[in-house]
Image (cartoon, rainbow, N blue to C red; front, side):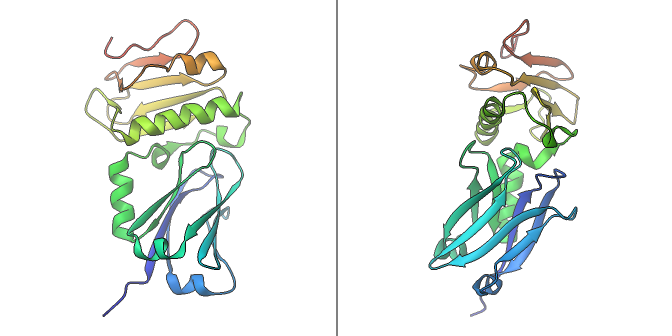
Amino acid sequence: MLIDTRRVVAVRCPQCGRLELRDYSLFELHSSKPTTIRCQCGHFLVEIGRHSRLYKLHIGCIICETQHEILVDAKGLIHNDALVLFCPVSDIDLAMIGRAERVQELLAAEGDLLANVVVPGAIDSAFVDIEIMREVLGRLQTWANDGQLYCGCGNRQLELDLFSEKVEVVCSECGGTLVIYAEREEDLAAMEGLQEVVLKKGAFTCIDSADFRYRHRV
């Protein structure tokens, strides 16, 4: 029986924002030397090493701007078609690892916001409040995963622009834009109670704690 030993890891580069998909062999992971994957820009992405019956992964996080250590059961990595690894702080998807076909399917179906991030330079700068920003991004990812974040024109493949004080969710089809401020606790309070968020076709809407309030379908 022919056993497919090739796997793919999909991860967002914290430095340039590029979504990288790299393949590797399971046999590489049995080496005493960890397998290191870097972005095309040269920045570190993932290091995978064997640790007893576990695989130890060090993954660069685009949100926390640091590396997270994640332990994965060796059998799970070998036998599962795909695994999704999450940031332990914000629950944002950090990476997907598994068979190429399944990883591609998950990226297409999940509506992963970070797979469409357009980085205008704010990733390398300090956020006004990193904890508030993590919470905002976590809620956006939850809405996207549940199919509750999309544009009124019907497009569900949205782009995410990160700035130091806000997030902009943009529809590439009609230009509809939702701005969410992430500066203080009151900005989080403005998001409370929203179960479904629909960008207005070709229009600008805003969620924040100041003068503007987003109201679903208003």
